Image (cartoon, rainbow, N blue to C red):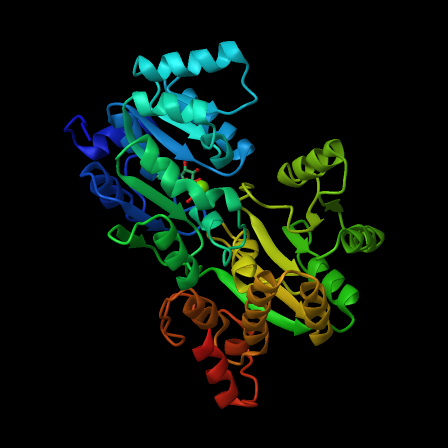
Amino acid sequence: MKTSNTDLSKELKKYFGFSTFKGHQETIIKTLLEGKDVFVLMPTGGGKSLCYQLPALMSDGTAIVVSPLIALMKNQVDAINGLSSVEGVAHVLNSSLNKTQTKQVFDDIRSGVTKLLYVAPESLIKEEYQEFLKEVEISFVAIDEAHCISEWGHDFRPEYRNLKSIIDKIADVPVIALTATATPKVQDDIQKTLGMNNAVVFKESFNRPNLFYEVRPKVNIDREIVKFINARKGKSGIVYCLSRRKVEEFAQVLQVNGINALPYHAGLDQKTRVMNQDKFLMEDADVIVATIAFGMGIDKPDVRFVIHYDIPKSLESYYQETGRAGRDGGEGYCLAFYDPKDIEKLEKFLAQKPVSEREIGLQLLNEVVGYVETSMSRRQYILYYFGEQFDPKNGQGAGMCDNAVNPPVLKDASKQLITLLQL
Ligand code: ADP
Ligand code: MG
């Protein structure tokens, strides 16, 4: 890969205006620029985009960025184009473009203006695009949200499966894969599917020391939640429910109790959904009661609590959903309610699914049960699940969970150990 041979910090300042790199960003970028494949596991908000945006801006040719969501791509493209005085530094390529627009994108790539080309995997399948991309200079390929490749991830997308063979057809260039999902199973899947076994792996800690974790039995839940929220008047929070009906119902319960709450789920019409989301972001509503449809790509730094009315389908989802609390480093209270009957319901739901999906679903569910029933440090449990060691006595965030504050009587420690070892 041909690049201008300058100090990376200067380039960072020049393009993004930042003075320092976050975490491993600098080494990641150096490694990619050396022509190696790179695999980045970094929690949400860690600064993954910059790991491919900066080297792309510095390199000759165009970097292909594979990303699953059109909305996310558009945001990034607008942001990059806003940083640059040159028109067309970043483009999205997809079938919604008309002939003239597509020609513009192709022209900008050919003339070397475009440094970042964002594509959804389903667009990359198009022969016409592949033929074109084969003929131009590609600097490298970035695969964002790479966990979409894996059925063990929380957002499996079958179109991600064929990426490897498509990329091979287009160019022989380094690949950088990035994800905020760090379970060893997903990691393994990504590396295998993308043929990245020789990639240099960068894994940052998934520990969120400022989050407090608590699990309560699901008893008098409505009253418990109202009490919890009332003790935090004016603070922002999210309540996750499994069903749309529950979302509507419980948003009303909160409203009746004088709490400024709004519902959010995919069944609401677009206008209401956007309005409710904006009100939450603009502090016109304190609490958003939502299904998991809420949250992807939402960056509100001062969410003070995330409540799970129903138990999530996997520990991975739980981590992602609770991760929306305390982004600014301030307080973040993560409270989950647990009723074994909810697990039965989820199991019944899974029973209708095809065998392979069912088996994966049941295992993921077992891991959630392990978490809610554990009497050890919840943080240690979550981090172990991500393949990370945590010292519950001295680690960062030690003491920040119900089990540390109120050690439960050890019911059956050996059983728990077995659950953990089976993860
Ligand atoms: P991720 O994709 O890992 O969730 P993003 O790439 O969206 O994270 O970055 C999260 C935030 O961090 C963005 O607002 C981004 O501008 C900011 N950021 C990234 N790198 C740096 C840096 N070196 N210095 C300051 N802010 C940064
Ligand atoms: Mg990202």
